[in-house]
Image (cartoon, rainbow, N blue to C red; front, side, top):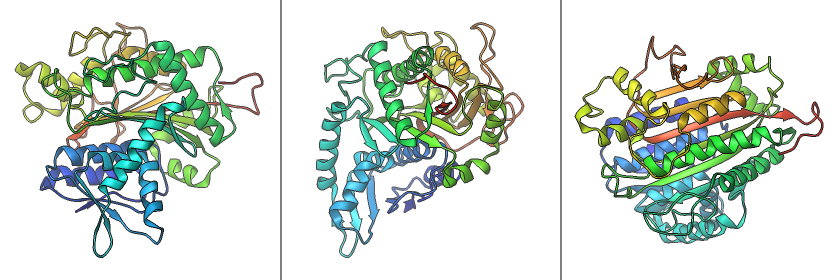
Length: 406
């Protein structure tokens, strides 16, 4: 059995991913009673760990730790948590760990169905405190939320317009930041930049993160999930988690030279259960080898290709400006991005390492573990499933700037 930690930090969850990849013997997945000490990227990392477990596991048996709460309350807690929700959707069986074990799969499915159907009723999707999220269950008819997709529950469903998706992500950010308190984004330019950035990420995961090696087949089982989370560093628990993270400390030091807040942020994540950047590329270009055959440096070069202008691994009819638009807009927003895909865990601080004009930028990232440029050193991680992108966007303190609102 492999257990997700109650304390959601990247280092602990990476240990879980490594264990899943090393053992690969249909381990049960145990969910904790509650989450605590949430760190940057904790939800995204936990969702990716769940997706990795599901991809290595034929039985997909989920075990839920029991607590003193009523059974109905425990099940409701699962549906309110994005990584637990994902685990329930990817599992074949779900048992509450009491004596005797209680099969709760049907009950969870019923609650999940209700949550998904209610999801589009609010522009910010599902909401729990400062967390707003949308889940796309790709192996069901529930993968095409009407806020994000033109109404066609088929494999040919097309994403909504840039304007529509901008409105949705803006609503999510507004809700998350209001609950966290004290921070806003400038209304016009920043909202457009945020919308363009997220639109590109969403189209990218729609095109590349939902399909099997044969692009005509959707992955089963598979989920994609997006969330926004309001961060207020005046909260002791959050502040403590940041203070022990050298990568984010470096980012905050550079941010102090800007007009953005160093206390209030929005975390935006998008996670899929696909083949990963390199896995997708190699499926489309089999002559280039397999993940097992290529070196970690070759894998890094493939990831950089995926980020270059129109250097995609398909000829899709849905075209934006590609992932360079994400990097350009993150530079304007003074943002930070972590990418976890296949065997790579990378980041880029767009304050200290801004994106320059297309054709000039080298598309280099930093290695998450060593904090060195990937041209100097790359840490080879366990081969995680899918792509997890987590972004930090600083807000502007309401007390410092008047007349700004999202």
